[in-house]
Amino acid sequence: MLDPELLERITTRRAELDELEEQLAKQLAEVRAERDELAVAGRVLERVTGQLAEKLSSTRPMPGQVGGRAVMLIPHREPGVEEDALPWDYQRIIAAVRQAAGPVIAREVGEVVGVDVSVKAKLEPLRSKLIKLVDRGWLRKLPDGRFTTRL
Image (cartoon, rainbow, N blue to C red; front, side):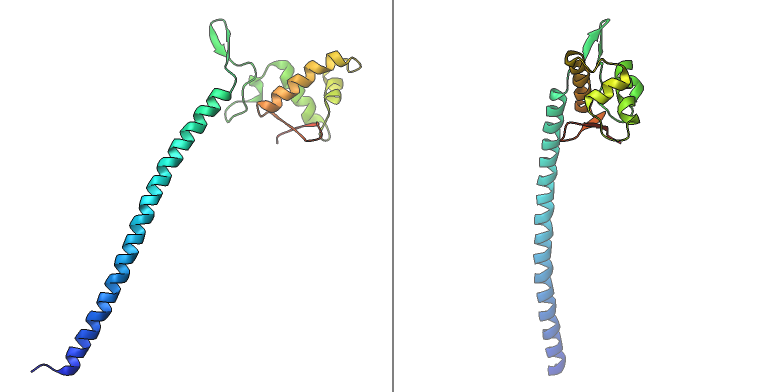
């Protein structure tokens, strides 16, 4: 004959294991659902990243043609692209902005690089170059219209 106390222990332990099995099955279902969600999120991220990269590449200015070769006169500032890749006049503009004690207006840059700042028509091409340097990531334009180096 079986011991009633031993049978009770076995029954109790079996109930504990059944409850643990239910908890683990629930956790396993949650883990699988989250893993599936992460797989979907990864595919969406890859697709969106590809679309953004395609959009960025299409919004960047196309290089011009010089001597049958594609060149971009004012390249985007990226790792590996040094300031000496810029034309000389643009390098002088960046140097003038960098030498200033703080943010500068186009007129102040013009005085340093030798532009006749008393004639507005001669100052506008300089302002255009400053804005081009901002657009390509070499300089930063503050909300008040002054320019500063990015660093």
